[in-house]
Image (cartoon, rainbow, N blue to C red; front, side, top):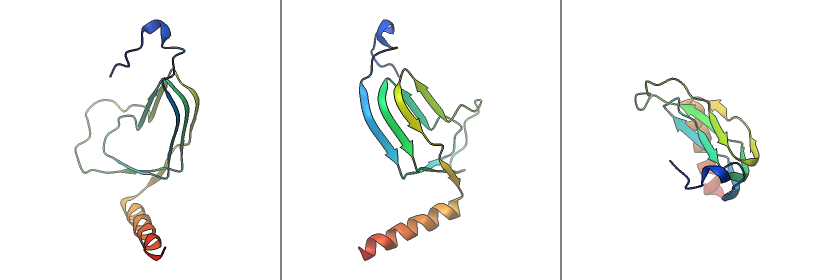
Length: 102
């Protein structure tokens, strides 16, 4: 996807700011990047979990890096905790029980 930024301005242009991605479960079946960041100033990716699934056939291409970050500043990325399906289901049930009592 193209950003519409002229090549001469890409190294310094930042059009997305102050993004926080936290406490999520990412269910992935493909070796594609989990997070692609371009032209961002201020991104935090933390306390996330990753579950590898076989719900769909994985792509046949070579594995890519988990994070693709270019032309960005102030980016803080914590690798996600890898969980099994059983761990993800247990945590979801616990969260639903906690919400029901609140």
